[in-house]
Image (cartoon, rainbow, N blue to C red):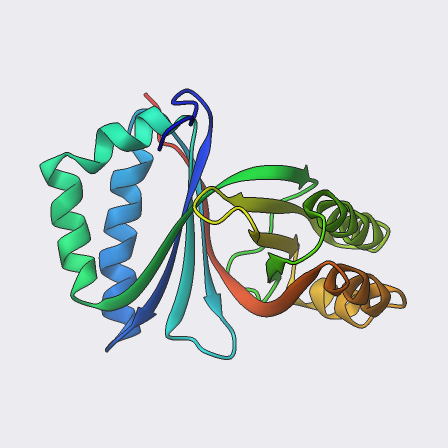
Length: 210
């Protein structure tokens, strides 16, 4: 990756479509996540499962540095994990950096309380970022909002993935039918091709230290 800052943070995004049994996948993937959490320069992870397509998972592994991630990918133990999981899924991978993160409170695991916003910018990217931020500010005025994170792809810089989360499903429900949300969604669509997915939080876990 020419020009990338090896000491800068990185988010690795994987979208998995499970071919067979999701319970078997979750057990294997849980082991892989614990392996990641013990790695130097690992920061935290988020895993969600689509509500309408429960065989699809989106996993975000946040690293403190690109260098830390690159060190890991050449290790035999990591490759063995990837090979085991690869037999179970169809996968799509991306790498991204956060351009706007709002942290208020954590979300309740098991709840349908995370919304993914996929966007391919066709206008001015800073204007799209501003409109996503405005949407988060609207959610922040409502009860139960946990925060948001807007990630810009380093592979295709016109592509963004936004996460918005609430403490529980009920708070998310209220926000998505709130006065003003559709107006903000239309505003984002004015600068990008936008699609949203409702997901269930499977895991939010920080690195294991010590």
